[in-house]
Structure formats: structure tokens, C-alpha cells
Length: 326
Ligand code: PBG
Image: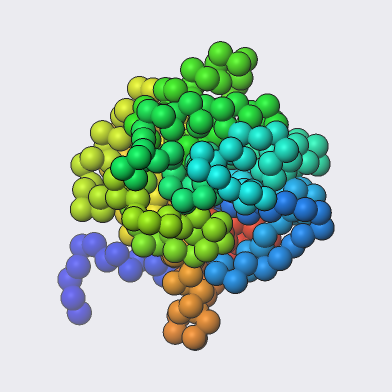
């Protein structure tokens, strides 16, 4: 018989024992459900690239928001598909755009649900970049800021609780804070996608949002995936500029980054479990190669364990409704 002082298996002997010593927790209140809002009424159209997710008109988005809140999920993240795109993404700042309309409907239907608006131009520009273009085709950082400011104020006017800039322009958090304060929206929070990598894992989202760049890629503004330390600089800049919460994106491939950002700031930190991660899980589970429920739950716990206070995930509603957050 082995003479062992410490036997780690002692605390794994039963489910109750494992529950007792478990470190990370996962609850519906740790999740944020993304929703894709389209023009019209009565629309609930399955998104081919994101099985189980829907294109929703503002009215059906409000219905779904009720279900989301009833399931214990505290927040939604809204993306919009405008009826028309142009070079400067005009619809991003229009009061009659689908997202703004959805915010009003949702706040009307479920006032206590936290409504977060993704703030970026890529869904609204005809070229698909996250900012306006210079003549040489590059994205013009400083000319983009005023457009983001207008869009943020428009989202706040519609009733958004939080604006979430995902464009990766330098200085946008400070600019947005000023714009919101000057227009009286001191209470509108900023969730900054402080650490957002240029990633292949956004593929299905871009199909769902029609936001793939027509030419080139996002490598001049989104972060280089070879860099980890740079994430801390990005995070600290956004803290200094007035961000209320930070987001690390994507999730699972960047757990090291998530953990280091968590350690470097006192602000709440979220992880975005992005569309490509969702697609990989769905594809592998669809082929019977992995157990879907277990693999998704393990993925969500991994992000919690690495330090995510909340997780933006396409699984939020389903996992909360089916009681799988345990
Ligand atoms: C907008 C934005 C993107 C995602 C969230 N906000 C796409 C991108 O940067 O190209 C991706 C989300 C996902 O893949 O689930 N800039």
C-alpha cells in the first residue's frame, strides 16, 4: 500500500464533495446574451451561420428579452443590421435604426434588463471596416471618433444602459465618456472591448451581421494575436480613459490574456465567447465527436476560472433555461 500524505482523490470522492470544494461558479447571472436586430416587424429568422441564433426585429427582440430576463440572465448585447449602408455608417447614429428601436422596445418590456449596445461602424459601413476610410484605403482613427460619439449618444438617448465600443480606435473610450457626459448621460456605462484580437474566430458573426470587410482585414486596428503583454497596456489605457468594464475577446483561445487582465485591474472583466468558438462546438457536437452539454459547460467554466466576471455567449439563454449553469 502506498504511503501517501496527501491524496488529492479524497476531495473528489462524491458529487457533494466535489461541489463543496469547487472553486469556480457559473450562474445565469454571469452570462450576457447577444441578439442580432434587423428592420421590420414579426421577424424571427434563423441565422444559418449561427445555428440556434436568430435575426430579430425590434418587437421580437423585446419578446426574447423577456424570456432572457425570466431565465435569470441580466443583460443582452445588441448588434444591428441597418436597412442601408454607406461609407460613413450613417445608420449607426439614427434614432430610427433597428438597434435604437430595439432598445426602446426592450426597456419598455423589461426595464430591469441591462441593455448593452455594441458600438462599431462595421455593420453600418458599405466597405465593412470599423471606421471611416482615408483616400489611401486606411482606416482614419481620429475622423472615426466623432461618428462613434454620435452613435453612442444616440444609443444612450434610446435608453441603452451600456455602450460597448468594439471598433479598436485609439482614444475612443475617453472621447465617448466626454460625449456622453456633455449630453447628460453620466449614468450610461462604457463596456470597452479593451482587448480585442484580430481573429479568424469572428467568421460566423460577420456572416450573421454582414460586416466582413470588402477589402483588406482588421490588422491595422485589432490586436496581433502574437502579443499578450500589449493587452495590459490596452486595458490600462481604457481604465484611464474612463471605462467601467472591460472585455477580452475572443475567449477560450485567450485565457492567458484574460487571466492577466483580470489581475491588472479592479474593474469588472468579461470574456466574449465568440461566434467561431460557438461554431466549433456546434460542428463537433453535431458530428457526435464531443458531448455538447459537457463541452459547452466546460468552456464556460474555463473562462470563469480564468477570471471572467461575466461571459458574453450565444449559449446564455439556452444554458440558463435548461439549468445547465451548475
Ligand atoms: C464588431 C464586432 C465583431 C464581433 C463583435 N463586435 C466582429 C469583428 O470585429 O469583425 C465578433 C463577435 C463574434 O464573433 O461572436 N466590430
